[in-house]
Image 1: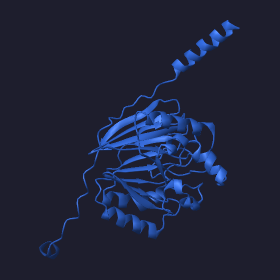
Image 2: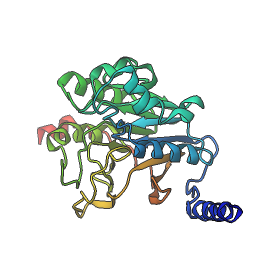
Image 3: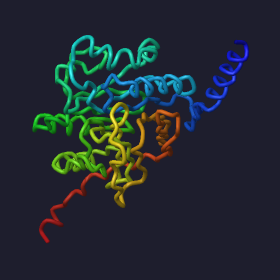
Image 4: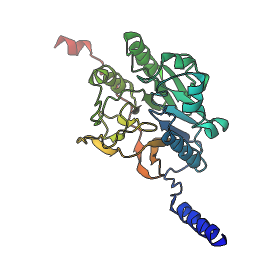
Length: 296
């Protein structure tokens, strides 16, 4: 009996020794903006809970203040029990610690999610919020109508924030084989992003992780595998900087001054991508045409 207990104890110690510890690559600079990113989460499956536990573990080393959600927050039913199983329980320690979640709507989401207070949407399908030197523009890519485009253009033009980050569900760029890029949405949004100085765009929908080389000066991420996963779904293009399609992930971001640091973590605490980008210069205003120029 004692020998069996001893063997079980040794086995437990061995297994625990194999669990990778949280390896932080972010600098933790003073007064930086720190947040996490998740997408396509709301399954209620054990993999979602495991990502939630990794987020809690990493927050002990990287105390992020809020989480942005890239849509498909709920799969299937959306009863109070569903919200508990697919959101409140997986992230219970984070919510208890006062971490705020800011959701965007995906194609599987009922627009009435905007009334669910823990999603902090202010009862709006699209909205903005600020944190430090960063302003976030949260869009509803399911219904990109004229009113939303006009609202977005004005809000971006009026923003004085050094960093402008847009996030929404459907990706403008994607090497995923299941959906691919939303080219119609790209035609509508990318010219606005370029003219108004958007720095970073994040989307979900494809159940993989992908980072692109800067496209027209803008950095694009796809992170749609925090709950769902399409195994080996990537077909890399020349524009892909990094891709990962064999496990669930979440991302941590730190913005300090003109630098944005990022680290993407798998369910097994593996760092699958990390790096730093410099803030792009603001777009130059169009040159003024003089009377003399017009007369020539």
